[in-house]
Amino acid sequence: MPAWKRNLVVIWFSNFTTLVGVACVVPFLPSIVRSTGVSDPARLRLLSGAVYAAAFLSAALMGPVWGLLGDRHGRKLMVLRSLLAIAVFMTLQSQVNSAWAFIVLRLLHGAFSGFVAPALTLVSASAPEDRQGFVASMLQTSLVSGGFAGPLLGGLVADRWGFHASFLVAGGMALLAFVLVWLFAIETDRPAAEPFPSSPPLSASGVSRFAADIRALLENPGLRRLTLLVFFFQFGLATTEPLMALFIHQLDPGAKNLITGSVFAAAALANLILAPLWGRRSDKTGYAPTLTLTLAGAALFYFPQAFVTAPWQLLPLRFALGCCLAGILPSAYALVGRMTPRSKRGGSFGLTLSAFQFGNVLGPLFGGAVAAAFGLNSVFFLTSAILVCAAWAVRRAVPDMPASHRS
Image (cartoon, rainbow, N blue to C red; front, side, top):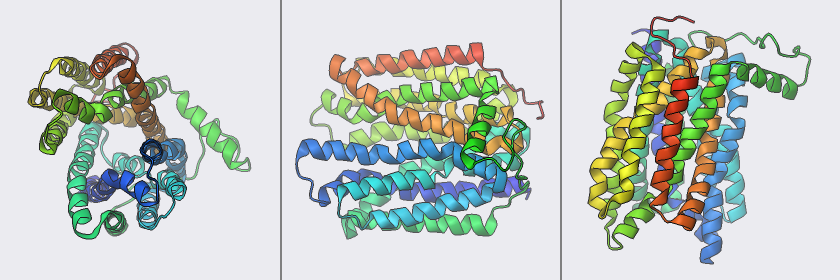
């Protein structure tokens, strides 16, 4: 088996295992906050939101730093660092007895445990240039599968041993992933510790060298535009998705949890099925055209969701939406990989994932404000408009990297 295929298999199972654990605890973050003695409903909502956002915020800030370190010292090392950090901080979170200590641990968790960018870099750097779309799409299926299975496992564990045990399970899953990568992943092209041509000398301070390396990445106009677009469309998606459960309750206050779960599962299932197909298509026909098409399709299927009158009507629309969402991130990540030399790919993926995380942090805040001012239906129009603008911007401003290109 070629080294890149071996890495793809190992990282697929590592990502799946890790995200099962991470997603296992998400439903119980408010329960942990409540268990620390917070009883006031308003304060509970505020602190729960802070706990949820803390990891995204610190991960967004640290993503480029870890990516650049991986470019200098090895991508496999960065994957192992992130998985070990998840194992440690998940275990510590199971023992918290203060809401503020929980927030601090979540900040540290996000700062040290971002695993998607280094895992993607490790596989991307070892894969052929004309398989970047396939690689990105397959790794997305591992994340979607893990995100789908995690809450189910978390619920089973919490029912039997309590929600604190879910964090111990998450730590154990991350440790298992650590062992898989340590034993079986291969660093095919260990990067030399060389700076960008415009970087300060090695004697300069670490901060100044990192700042110069990030500036050098942003000097690539295609990468700069694509990074902004990743923030833009993820911001748009995040304005709506966290409010979907409230929207279903608005449609039918008596809707069962099974209906709510099915609405979310419909998009996830379509994403899981279609992601590899979009990946293969983009490798053959181009990444920017695929990104434009999938963004426009997602906009098309968000818009009518505002007009449904019963939760079941969301199911076909959400499935169709998932078919389009399946092609967005793999195409964007493949473009990032093709725009960047292999030796600098960790920094590029770290920067792109930071933009993605900032969209996850700011989108729900903006969506909540819009919903409060104009109603829940309005956020579907907003997301649709943002995705249309993103599709237009990709078509106009992002250069494509044809499948025959070699960097």
